Structures are given as structure tokens and as C-alpha cells.
Image (tube, rainbow, N blue to C red):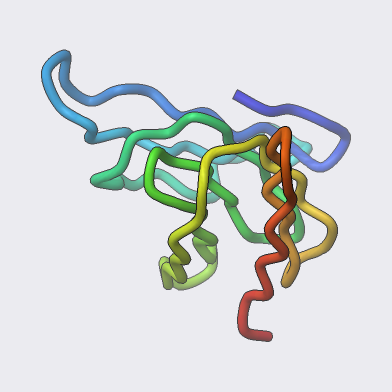
Length: 103
């Protein structure tokens, strides 16, 4: 899970033997604004300005909480750093991968 002054996002496995996860987002008042299932492993998760960012085994994805649109990019392993709503950086020991999402 990830929580800050903007809200809270939680990823919970929907089954013990698969990579299906339920993503739930609450705004800063505690109102649920997103509750959907994704068919990906979730290694890291962040929430910023109406978008959920997921780092999985195969890459990084951005999900719009307004309409459920998902944008995915393949990338190597590393830690997720969300710079802004359209930019993420995957930081590994030997290199960093810059990911630019559509505006």
C-alpha cells in the first residue's frame, strides 16, 4: 500500500495461486474512488493526481482512476520512482529507465 496527504492506494491479491490483484484507492477524505481487479503482479504501487502506478515483474503501468484506462511499458527490474503524472523512473543498480506516459 501507499498513503500520503492525497489519499491511500492498496493492492491485495485476489487469489493465492495467481497474479490477480484488487486495486483500491481512497481519496484524502476516505471516499473510495477506484476498486478494480488487475491481472498483474504488484511489486510496488503509487498514487498521484488520479493515477495509480504499478511496478510489476514485467514492467510499469499507469491506471486512470477516472476511466480505468491502462497504459503499460515493459522494462527491467528496479525500484519505481514516480516523478509526475506522466513520468516514472525505474532505478536499478546499474542503470535507470525513463518512462514517459501519454498526456
